[in-house]
Length: 576
Image (tube, rainbow, N blue to C red):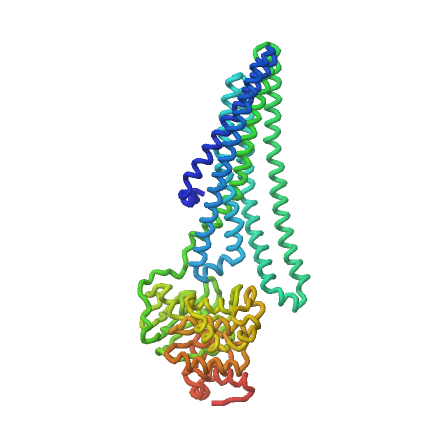
């Protein structure tokens, strides 16, 4: 929790002013019971109207000043909390963007969303509460004790008995609450995960009539969360009445002791009422601190979850200092590369994989599902780092380059065409924000996207909705390809990104790429043999290893795996 102080340091003056204003409010409030005792025991008892009016004016004046103190504390504590939450959320979001795929896979996106929203809000709320209560509760408790004992020292015995009871209740609530709140946060993660899956897969759910199944799945998690909250409420409701019971016994003790003192003439009725007020303040302050401990239990869980992310280092370290010199194009070489996904069981997904690409060459990679084709694409820009071996770009290990320089020289179109809310032009401009409209249209023309984009009423200014919902699968893929081409990359990686295109459109795409990107090194990952025929050479992957590499004719003659792929797609039985 102390690590959070670094995020408050920038707003230290707000954090200092808030408790100072609260100190002012509490000090003025502690004067009120004393004024009340004066009115009853001296003003009313002696019929002194002047004293009554004068004391009432003082009570009103101090009450107004106390309101100013309360307003100031609320203002500055809120400013501190809001700025703190904003900075922490920004820091957490920035750190998440720096993590490699290995770390984001481990945390899950639903859990990261919960930490960025609910957990940060929990800490933000706690900061505000602390700046108000960390002064109010202890000062009110200490001040109340002093004022009560100053009126009659015998009242101190009541406090000496009751305060330890209330402190015990507070500590018990913290000990019981912390593990329960930890379970709640995990359950919230699970519910968010289910919601995220259902919203992203809504069409599949409806297509397979699985709505009732998913509803039951959600209901189970939702009920478990509700039951956990009820468990917390039940245990807390059993604990806190003990504190209230202690307070009532304290008041009863004051009434008994005060009654004897009033009867003996040692105290006035007003003083007894003042002592009751002070003791109530003391015990309410301790109950407030008990509630703060309960808040602290849930806040500590939230803080641990946030710092678990912040203290997680990316397995892909950006410690390279070299810049990619792509003046003469880019060569690529895999040198005995072995890779296994983090925490994955079984054999490595890639095993001793080696191949070379000269600047301007085009390599197509074919293979069965799970053979490691897409993994090759993700290792080049260092989304993951290989376990063993080297990946060389222009003769240097990719780890020698800074991540920015490495990724700036290439463009990648992944299997899933991820688009963003906005227009077609805005999505293509992700490739190069400085590009002109003519450049956008040229990239779209090469990607075979200009035809449908120009056919819309608003053409390139057409809003495509969240994740490009208004576009077909093939249209989304072509926009994603255009986005990559707008970067004018020296290395282009196409990861099975034409799977939704018809053969004629795909052939036109590859013909345009061959014509317009003669100096660009291209890596084509494909399922269809027809997608690979325009490449200079074809590599066949089988179980993460190279089963053969060469031209179409060479592989037909030498590679049994390739012949099986061609046969399965053409329906013709091929022999060596």
